[in-house]
Length: 137
Image 1: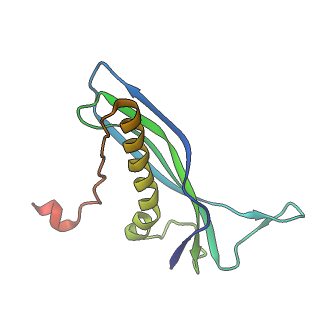
Image 2 (image 1 turned 180 degrees about the horizontal axis):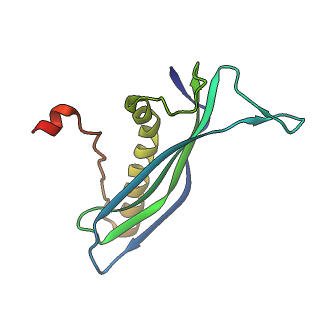
Image 3 (image 1 turned 120 degrees about the vertical axis):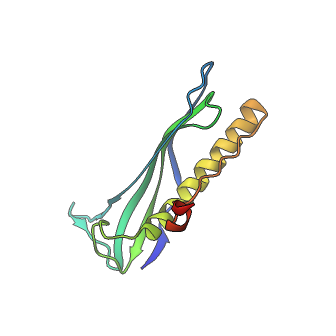
């Protein structure tokens, strides 16, 4: 299955706060939902080459030391070429491929906003899911 970007990554919402108290946390919710082209007759038309999905990242995080927090939603529409399922059978690797552009955009937005507003850019690096080998150490 090939993943084709159908539109650019969109920052649907972004919010950040500077806190007096420290409360480090991280919530990253990744979802996919099918999207359809609506024809002139108002009926949903499925893609001919696969399935269109909207990939979304809903985030709420306060990296160490936890005095800055960020929340919002980033999304992108992609075509899962030659795939006609509902997404339940996609592999972890396929989910990572779809989420990578969203995670990169989140890191870039946070870096640029903190550089402009605080004159100290915050560089976040989101780690990949641990492998079985990583879990054994």
